[in-house]
Image 1 (cartoon, rainbow, N blue to C red):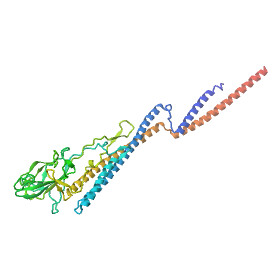
Image 2: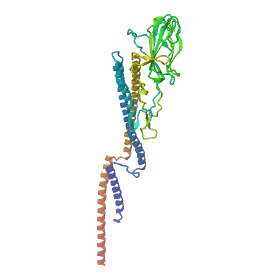
Image 3: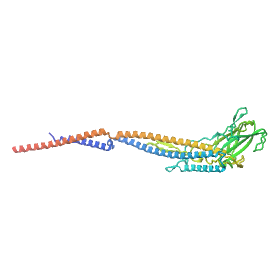
Image 4: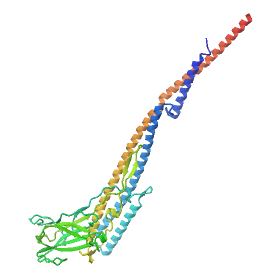
Length: 454
């Protein structure tokens, strides 16, 4: 019987058991079933690929959170500007009262001017991580088309609201607007302005104030135009011009009114309705706007995922008094010029200036509200993107865990089994060694006895 040779298989099994036991101990200590490529080559490679994706997604979430913070700063700045515009609107309404003295109006205008300066300062100072937010470099907003808007006219002398319609607009007995076929302003040619057309009187004969022409029975059509375009409009911000129009001579189409400054700049092209003596007191007021050109900036790009091309873009509008259309607004009684750009004095009222300012501020508030809504929509988009990325991270980490993490219950069971086998194997090996020693002793004694007998 080869007692010594029979320990080989026992030693081999004991070594394997000890190796398995050590592997289970490492798995339980680290929590990882696959620690190196040797543990599971294909599983390790898959886990590393997924981990790369997870790392990218986690950084993308941080990028999106930073972008959300940027938009929060932008919205807070715009909210501040909107509050200033609300205050300016309140001051304008306050100025539209005959109870205000010239000194009162001057004080109101001083505050309005300071608030307008503050809007420009706030917009230029707004930054995030060194990026100037509202300078226009991130403005990719769509264009706002030029417009012509009909607004309420100033009350008549008796306080009544004038009608914008005449009794026989087409010459066939049908009523219609005092002026029609209003053309949207053209950038580079038209001047944004408030224009009131009013039939102020009837005479027979009616003498045209500009040309001295006797038009026979006619009405006097007065145009009051107000603009903050400065020298492009004229020597004063308000023009007053009156023309004599023969009764029952219309409609008169293709009427063109240039600005007092000339130079090819234009107030409006329109059609004058057929007028009669009964139309005295009729008035129609329009406000023209050049709109807003499309933003020429480039939207900010934020990498929101773990792969190339996983990006979102955010745009920030240009913010300034000029961009909002409120630069230069005034509630002071303006200097008045005639059709030939000659200053004829100062208006006794600020009503047209204040009306223009109020409309401009209301439009600016509406524009800013729309822009803030766009900022809010982009914030929601980023939040949704971050939420989607977080969901992907959870699922991807779960996939890595399924590949690499230790099954604690199974590992503990395997470790207990290996410990028992190791203990038994060690005991068996010790017993076999003890038996081998006894065999050697017995053989030695047998040889000794045989030698004595011989």
